Length: 243
Length: 395
Image (tube, rainbow over all chains, first blue to last red):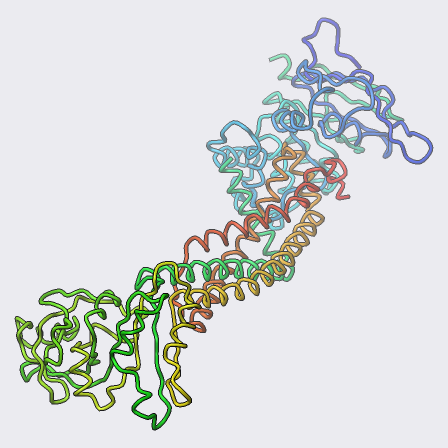
């Protein structure tokens, strides 16, 4: 699954990544030599049956977990030797997470939720509120900024969560079943939003899904079976990649 | 960092409010503990001040001797001025000032009338009681049986208010006896003295013994010799006045003894408050730890989310530490109130001068904060060490 020869170096690159868990007498290998290159502007879907290792892969790409062996390069930097604190910093700057069940902090308002990643920036975060409001506005949530998550519908909560993932201008958005908790119509809206962000602004994203329709909307479509990836389809480069 | 702190404070407040009952129990423990610490230190400071002021007032080498006679005591058992002055011959006593005291209405030049203490005194009186004249002079031993007097500052103030400009030379009438004022005293705080010098009219002791109905010596102020101990002095004085079965009962009070008694009382309070304080601080601290542990458990998902969004372990740790410090500081503030109230109660009980000690309050806040850090550390550490993947799964 490496990128085409002669292309720019990959923004994100997994080389022979393996992950095994020791449970009882035997070690279960969940990832068995994953290779994956993602370039700036890629919209990648990863599909696979449950238990195939999608979430583990996502946690490794998201720097929440470390591979047992293999290498992971982000923007050309090897992440293997990084300390927990360095990984946290990189997560804050480079990764934007979107979860199936939104995972907003219930006691904070929409804009405060969006601003949380900015709180953890070591550089001063002047205009934190402004940036959060702008991002919410961009995602069509400008009139709900002071609502708490419980006062928002599922689709609205997921928009706030996407705003939170994007507010820090990450290199890549990692979405784990972003439409999984939504009805078909709302899920479709969320997918259209992500595709639009990809096409209009060159947002790079990896979307984990078991929904064929969702996967079909992504330029790159990867199947995961038993801890290995195989690229199923690769459409012509998206608008952002050429532009 | 300030933004982070502010965000954390807000988060902490709402999360503490969520677990009301547990929070309340922890608060009470910390409050009682801090209250005891504050009261303990306040009482210590008050006693120190009190003893210092007593010391500064008259010096710790001053003794108050009082003689109480049995009903119908024979003349030969009555202590005379010369007997009392003879105290100075004792090795432990440097100087003695016997005085007699009575009360009556005083009027100046037939005008201002007020209730005064009339004190018959020797020249040593002014020195041992640290009385100073503002104008004129003190009573001297050469005023033997003369009708001269020195008036206290309040007496003088009343006279001035009544239009008497110059008091020295004016006549002062007390209970029908007319004296000529020869001096006016400066304002003198009462302190340990047995009389209020501001509302006194001081006359020669020889005159007083003629005028008063009960002229026997009942009170003596004495100064100890250098290096003498008050217990030894009290024993010597007791022996000196021992005159058969119907002799006077002698009581000797000294600043040193009073201070000793005060410190003893303080130690008792300190022991009580110290044990109550440390026990309740410990109980409160465990309460804080419990609140925090529950909070960490209940918020595993939140911790996972924050970690995913880029929070470092240190960020999570400080978030929970801030929460526990906040909890215990609120308890501490309540405790400071309780401590001040307890101090007031103790002062009412002992008669010490109540005052609020900012030092003690500062210590209270410090103790509360320290308890928050100490007992909040372990839960915060646990929160920080959570595996983000497991925390995100809510496990």
